[in-house]
Image (cartoon, one colour):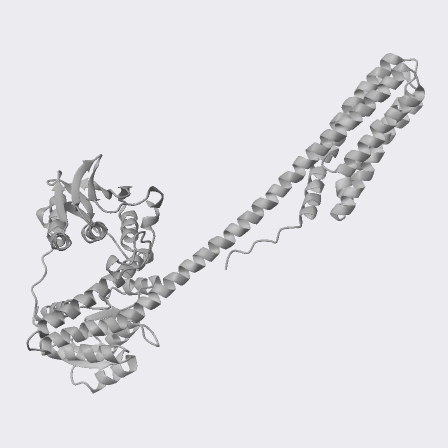
Amino acid sequence: MPPSRPAPLPLPQAIAGEERRLLKEGTLADALGSIGAVAVVAFAEYAHASHAAITAWAGGMLMLLALQLAFPRLLSRASDHRFLRGYAVLGVVLGLAWAACVVLVRPDDFTYEAFVVLALCVIFTAGSVFSAHHLPMLYGFQLSGLGSLAAIYALRGGTIAWSIAAGFAILMWTLIGYGRAFHRGFVRAIELGFENTRLVGELTAKTHALEQANVAKTRFLASASHDLRQPLHAISLLTGLLGERASGPGVPDLVQRIGQSTEAMESLLNGILDISRLDAGVEHPQLIPLSAGELVERIDRQFSPQAAARGLRLRVRAAAADSWLRSDRVLLGRMLDNLVANALRYTAQGGVLVAVRPRGDGLALEVWDSGIGIPADQLDAVFEEFVQLHNPQRDRSLGLGLGLSIVRRTAELLGHRIEVRSRPGRGSMFRLVVPRSTPASPEEAQPAAAPPAEPVAGLRVLVIDDEAPIRFALQGLLEAWGCECLAARDGAEAEARLAAAAEAPDAIVCDYRFEQGTGVELVGRLRERLASDVPALIVTGDVTASQLIDIAASDLPVMHKPVSPAALRAWLGRVALAQLA
């Protein structure tokens, strides 16, 4: 669920709340400024007006300003509507009180009267800034104050008095106009805040929806991958068993073709597995010095037949062939394989060039092709999952659209920079920039040699899988290799078979997902029962992050369905070799 956010207030209520806040915050400054103005006006008029009258006016003003200071506290529990209505009334009273001071000045003393008029202009101009936050207060303050002053001087008659009255009226009109403009900007700012809040809310909701869709997609892919791997695993094992038992004209070729089809489907599912492993964070790079020359030679050996079959030319050029780079052998090899396979897949004529060139402090591994190219606005999109710009019909021979996504994620994991340039109709260039290195030793620079195949005949193997076709295929394949096989569908049956067996198994081949518990837990329980760390292999079709992390944390070897018979036999061979040691 997205994080809960308080529901926004209606716009009028929000405006009222903001007006209340600004009036409350501005009251102190306005009241203190007004107290200073009272002192100046009283001092100037004291010698030219009735002392009692000016003292009474000043005292009344100070009491009124003290009430203004106390207003926020007195109305602290009032609703916004009552609070603002109170300030509107206060504005009217303050306007009238300020206008009253001109009545105290003797009409024959024009100099002091002019000073008072000027002081009142300043007072009402400054007051408009404070009262403009709430239009009723602005209207009340200006109309009652400057309106009364204009009326007083208009009634006195005479050119000077009428001029002063007109000046007060013009000033009132101007200040009300500026105040209204200020208030419109103030309201617009609140509306923009509302709009931003709404947009943020919509963006948050859409982001959450995208996250949920991504989770659902991952869950669907994991489930679909598991369900597809189960029968494919059985087919792979049955194909191996068929190869062990079948004979006759054309049978080996048929078995080989079935195996090739199985491997093609396996490569598609392994793309999903690679994405899941990168998402789960169970890939732990082993950075070692690698020979740039050997990397491109391996590409040449691996892909030249495929290029020739498509009528293309694959060239490798290692201008820095004697240089070394630092990366993970398997992960970097997977990235290069994906880039070269992608280049061959989308090149109809011409060829593909794989080059190694110095670039700054590193080496650039570049894959050039003369294929269909990528539009400039799609250069980022091709690295997204399942994006195939030129495969709208979803031709299976063109893959699933995961290769470049795997390349980008793996490059981020290794800290390698990936760049791409392309011209539609002319071809593309993908570049991996890898740090330079110097081999620490000849042993580190060379890949470990594959151990020789060991005989597995005589091994006692416990197979646990809840799929009957897989148990049947595994049992037949193991017995064809000369192994003794105990097959069980779950933990309870496995324990029953062990209780009835004369000897403990030499190895355990166990599925991961069961109706109750996991294969990791089951292996631990069986080892505890046997009081021995029997070699165990987890075979799984699951690709979700949590399950991959669980298996990785167990330190048990794992093979992902469909498992090739050759890989399974190689693992059993290592078990047999360890028993002889």
